[in-house]
Image 1 (tube, one colour):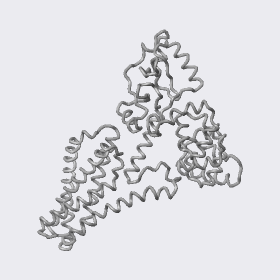
Image 2 (cartoon, rainbow, N blue to C red):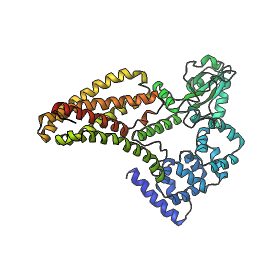
Image 3 (tube, rainbow, N blue to C red):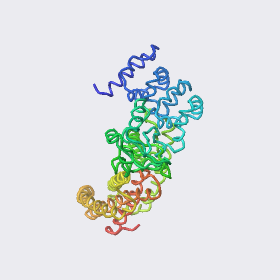
Amino acid sequence: MSADSNIEEIIDELKEELARGVGVPRALRRLSPPDIIDVLERISSEERRKLLALLPDDVLVEIVSKLPQQVLIDLTKVVSPSRLARIAIDLPSDELADLILRLPPSSRRALLKELPLWKIEEVKPLLAYPPESAGGIMTTRIPVFHLNQTVGEAVKEFVIRSKFEEYETSRYIYVVDDKGRLVGIIDVKTFLTAPRDKKLKDIMNRSFLAVKASTDQEDVIRLVVRYDLDEVPVVDDEGKLLGAISADDLMDVIVSEATEDIVMFGGIPKIREPYLTARIIELVRKRAVWLVFLYLTEAVTISILSFYEKVLASVIALSFFIPLLTDTGGNAGSQSATLVIRSLATGEVRFSDIPRVVLKESATSLALGLILSPLAFTLSYVIAHNLLVSVVVSLSIVLVVYVASMIGALLPLVASKLGIDPAVISAPLITTIADSIGLTLYFTLAILFLGLKI
């Protein structure tokens, strides 16, 4: 039995048990925390609220920070602020900060009133930074010791704090000076096996990479990918250690950013809510703006066709191949854009690499055009039985692929230079621009080879 079918069977069981009001559904015991979130996304709001009210606190601790926005709103409807505070106390500081920012304003105020002062003080530094910055995703619960401490002293404290689960990171020990500035790091294995009478400054690695709290999380990911990091320390402008971004948080960010870029490249603005729980009005609002924009830009294509109306009327066969040219150009441009956006995301390509990108894309797109050209010639001749039309189509396919590929490659680079997320340069936009230029080239060649007049 597949996992999907198993989940669907459990959902059916849950619905029956919720309808009977038998307390905590027995089917719930067969679900892991990620599966519970999956179930919550797939049931109605009324059933969701019933189930959320029945979930034990230890289960809610596991899932509350990962709940989709609409599910989180449903949770606030059935869980009292005092109970939500009991759950929130057990959350890591970075997860709690994210939860607080995602709560509706009234629920946020109610939760803060119920949280103990020590927990508020722990999470307060994280709330000062944007959610998508390094400061917003870091944790402050990290092992930090002074450079003049001995290994023995530090290990003793480290073991005690670890027993009480005070640390949320496990890869490095962070060493600071009298002013709290990060001066070195030690991997845990070296730390635990070093001679106990040695001072931390004698065994620490002074060569390390750190990010500022204001650094965007996408830039953090580029650094992580490039240098194969497990954890990233976060410092302020003066080099004082503020916290660290753990491997788990990095993985969450990588998945989040990749998903966001894929959605945006499809021509849809940021939608953080899973599809099944997203409100219809939200989907309409996000998608409508971009669709209207693309619809209006397509008016340029219509204008071009209207401008060359006499050319089309003179040789009807030219109209047969417009879809072939526009679709091929759009596909070629999307391919180039995808490769460049991916390279920008991983830090392989920068704006200064434009000359290299132009050379590489020129050679690649011309080769692709030359591969497609004989196919286009043969197909057009079979359909139109006109040698000159076939020549026009075969030459146009080379130019269209070249131009569309260059547009797809250069637009994301220009966007990154202007401080715009390259993923905003979506496939539909590239296709629209490529259509306009490709049709102009097509009709220009037709006029030249067929001796037509506009």
